[in-house]
Image (cartoon, rainbow, N blue to C red):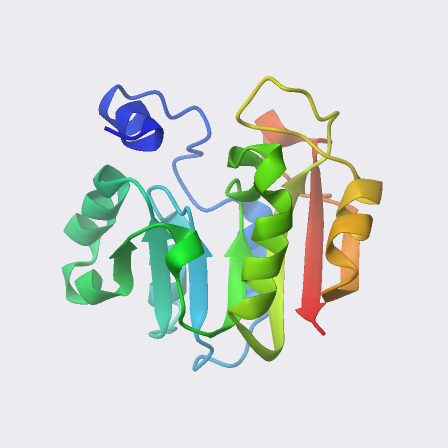
Length: 188
């Protein structure tokens, strides 16, 4: 059993906020194009997916390496079962207009960050956006979650993305207060 599936099976899901987080909700609320093709990688229980569907977005997909969270989403939204991809994100070939990031980047071993940037850039349509939250606390070998800094993110993403926004999240949920950066990166 993979690491993430095991965490779900044991109920060790401290990252699960139990609902969509405020920064992601407020970002979604300002989106006007309901036809955007959206991906939520490593979405866990997929509260963002539920919210997008409820707001009228129908072209939304979730990919997760663990089966349990996908089954949880499927129970809530059975009509969208084909939008739930049980696969390794790095094997994905489909293109998207928007990818929402929350706790996926920080869950990957830090040595995979270059592959993350490459993969994100390769699966976004021209002018596609990668948006969401990145942790802002010192990177250590202990994790997940693994931290990072604004400087690291600029250096890492700038070769492939135009940094549209990268700033302290003013509306993070309490446990993540002052530890998150909200960002919008547009693929070059």
